[in-house]
Length: 182
Image 1 (cartoon, helix red, strand yellow):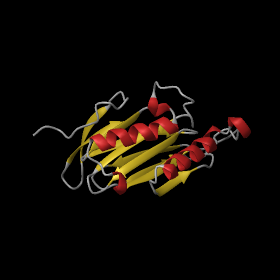
Image 2: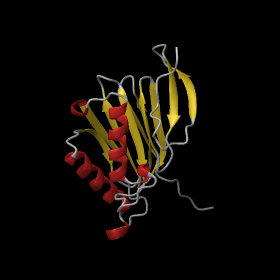
Image 3: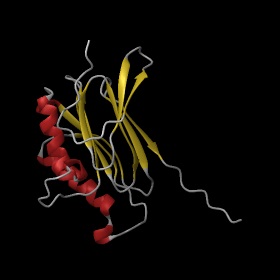
Image 4: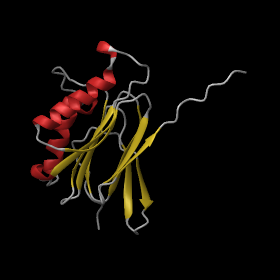
């Protein structure tokens, strides 16, 4: 039996490994890099690491077990067509397009947002984390995709793993730094 499909148009350098799940399924674990996105069908674990001001956008059709994850760095592409995963606005469009190709149903899609921290406490135009959160909320609202889970803002980094079998999203939050004098 051939492995389940990964969308061919996803702009992602694939970092694959097979993991054995507790329920006995063999699952592909795929790491999505910064500025990349990936869509996949069951059974996959899509993960991304070291989200600071970047935001992870997860879309999921539970019935079809089709999911996607983007690690977006900036809120708006401003007409730039290359690297759709890099920008929140183009990442959501690319995830939707590729998930429809994998037989997802738009009316069944749900989303999750993780990240968008302000690690260095920048304000105004430099508050990229908050701008990413706002752009993602706006694009999902315009696309009529409900946000089921959100772990955003603050000043700590996060990593996320998304299971296309169960729809579970696991978020690790970095600990505050340990500061001491020598």
